Image 1: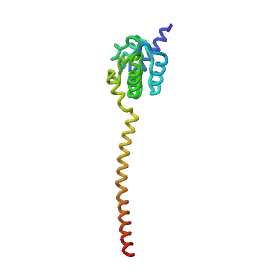
Image 2 (image 1 turned 90 degrees about the horizontal axis):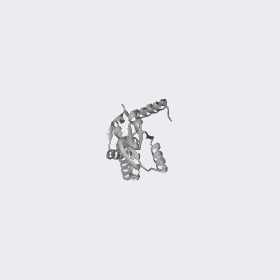
Image 3 (image 1 turned 30 degrees about the vertical axis):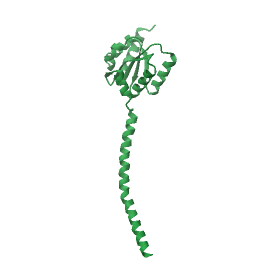
Image 4 (image 1 turned 90 degrees about the vertical axis):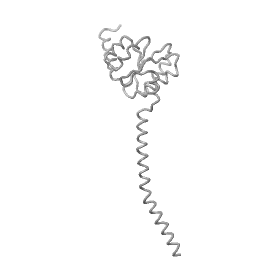
Length: 177
């Protein structure tokens, strides 16, 4: 049995995790096998997400004063929390993918992204967005594309001049013969 001091440490640690989270998803599950649970944990770990089953009373107390406070009414039944301190898109993609693959055992309860409570349809919309890295690469591609076009245009002038000089040289060389 946990001592009061140990429970207080657990509460403080969970509160700290809730405060640091940019995005959080509350999910419920019924009849999940160990294999499915490990599969979900592996998928979430790969995208840098903390996932854990929480006691509802402890989670409600830890959520006080954090962005998750808006979703405290969802801490009922078997509840797990997935927290991301980085990109909410990766978390949304992983949760949406697992929810679609396992609708009979895995249930989305609520999500909090950047301090706003979101529904499942919003999570799916976020999941369809490209990740931060993808957006950066697209912007860099567009910048590089314009630079390549500029180089092509600037190099066309001397190239065309060289072609004209060559053609004039061939014409004069042909007249001399």
